[in-house]
Amino acid sequence: MGIEVKGIKPFLFILPILIGIVIFGYGCFAYVVKLSFFKTNLLKPPEFVGLKNYIFLLFESKYFLISLKHTLYYVLWSVPLNLFIGLSLGFAMHSKIKYGSFLRFTYLLPWISSSVIIALIFKYAFNTHWGIVNWIFTDLLGFGRIRWFSEMKTAVPVAAIMGAWQGMGFAMIIFLGAINAIPKNLTESASLEGANTLQIIRYVMIPLIKPTIFFYLVICFISAFQVFDSVFILMQQELGICSVGLQGSILTSAYFTYVLAFEGQQFGVAAAMALLMFLIMIIAILIQRYFIGRKVTQL
Image 1 (cartoon, rainbow, N blue to C red):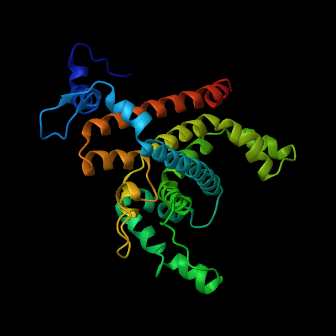
Image 2 (tube, one colour):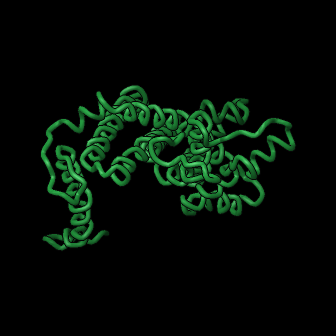
């Protein structure tokens, strides 16, 4: 039997985390909402400007649409990559393979590693002049050198591949847990009926883990909209070629917010940018919930 605790004592245990959520969660969010209606660099007294920060972003600044375009392009690369790699590793680790425990540990290493270190590794690997990727394309395959970080069409896929590689351990754990929770009698019955491995995965296992797939899609979508540290590292100077700031080949929404706040000293505009992206992300998640989540909950 469990121990029933009455009175105020249970609330004392959760009080510290509640205080942290109120101060650093709701408190900071309220401050950002307030800041979005002011013009300030945090050094001078703020000047109330009403909706001018939002009007500037939506109708006057071309970089808002550029950052939104880059972010959506990153999402289109990142989310399918993460889902495909996570599902593949989940099913691979579910099967009894040799050195399975060692492989699980290996796949988890990128996830527990620093994002900055991984970004530096990919930055040097895709370096135009002496990166190993260009060495493979040039010396082994006979293609010309590719300036991976010179334009959005090539820089964003590199960042998405890096994010998928780093997050594959987390995805593997999520999907492996869901796959292991499937009753074995269902897969055994399908096997007795003559279904092969691919048919069992497609018609039995994947439908049963759809709630987990939807959950992971939402997590990937939120993470893709928040990507910053890897983009910041990749957009630093490469052999004297400055690609920092608004001229970078990757201008995601989070990175654009950073440029507005800490390079442009426009903290009010940056706060408005953050809130706009928050609203866009909420709307996108609700759309996902309507078209995908509703079917999942009906299973």
